Image (cartoon, rainbow, N blue to C red; front, top):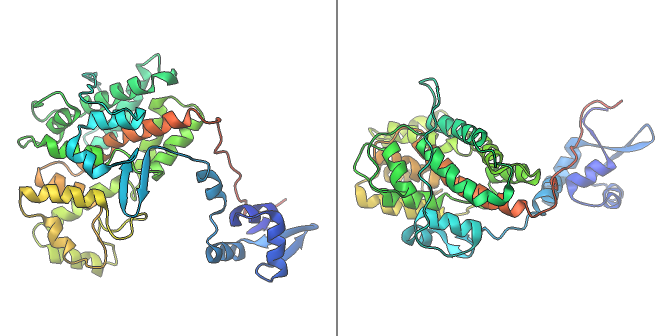
Length: 373
């Protein structure tokens, strides 16, 4: 029967034991129907009960297995292994923070390799993130030791360097740090690599974001680090994840001439204003607050004019990245590229945790709602 669940399926969705499902029936919270002598439950009715009880069901059964020592996201604050992320962004290099995420060892002066120039023939329509995804695949194909999971840190350092090297050069790097190398590929303006370094640190990890979940699922199958990063990049491509920074950049470009008009046009079309609110944070995005404060030292921000029109919500890191790109004449997809490169550090940290867990531990059962034989 279509749109019906078995007792076990209903129990998984509600996050309870099968016996509890029958107690819901006796309390008239659910209606049981006999189909071929088997108790069945209407999907809509089970879903409505799940919403009322706050049940997390099968998703909780997966995510509750993940114990991590990498990021703490609590009370609108973000920490990496117990350290304030805005604090790290003010005092550390991206390389040293990446090493901290991977090892928990406080280091100074960690150096990433030079990186291999990866030739790729892509159409003119290819974005920076398209190049990043292709670069990861090509770097993987060129590494015969990619299945040695014990080399994850070495692989990650080389991969980040290779990915940066794959982007078109706009100028001469001012130094050898990742922020120096990346700036020369994103902006034609005089380097402000302190800002780019801060952005990379602020974006390096964010608990179990959807792309991190994808990366951990790949790692649970003992996929090599390149494949883990490819899984994360696949989820990152979504409009509601990494691509949100590009959408916010295009909005700010439009708003630069007439902020109020751009906001009014979006509201008239029934569209949300890009770069505001967050699924996890309640009243502020600490990353955006920190980064926008840094950007205000470089002149008036279009973002501030838009923020003034949105008193009931708060700016997120997508808006801050968009303003960064706008301020320093970066291409629309620069924020997405910065996000992707930074998050490689976090994905590898989570993969290293996952490699120590039982393999394939996220295999779960679907809740079948189609026709039954």
